[in-house]
Amino acid sequence: VIMRIGSLVPIPGVDTEYFSTLLNKVEDLSLLDAFTGGSFERMSVFALSITPYITSSIIIQLLTIAIPKLEEMQKEGEDGRKKIAAITRYVTIALALIESIAMAVGFGRSGLIKGYQGFSTLHYIVSIIVVVAALTAGSAMLMWLGERITENGVGNGISIVLLINIISGMPSDFATLYST
Image 1 (cartoon, rainbow, N blue to C red):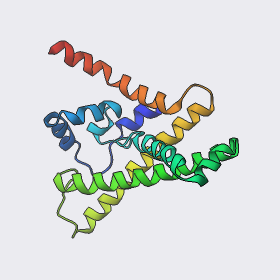
Image 2: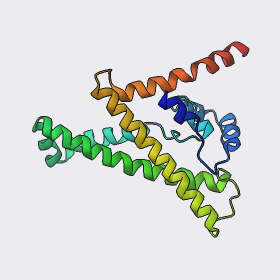
Image 3: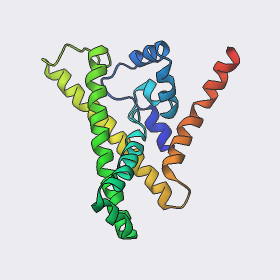
């Protein structure tokens, strides 16, 4: 329920019509929208989805092989795995921040932010900060939610987050398939 609500709450100051038309033009972005459960098209708080966490997990796993200190941590047992998990969380926040800045600035110039007039106006800079904060917080919230699901023994939380996002788009996908 939390995931679906977060997927429907738009980021303040964002032109959601822009993304609807953008997704209709570029088919490659529709796959990204499927993984986010429609959050990308609505440019909601959860538009980044769980992808920064997945990316940081892969980066840390690869660095574990390359950096002896991380390899030692992994071999330390439970304490080492907790340290690596903490590092993964920090890298996730950093990646979410980088991705949200790139999206806000890049899409802002193309029409994402209502009333764009360049970097010269304070309103635009505040809008960029709001978009970046909302996207980063949304990704962190999904990471936290996925970890809580895993801790409670329901299953792999990150996989469940992705599954819910994909399943949520299935009714509209079936309707589109039927009409086509």
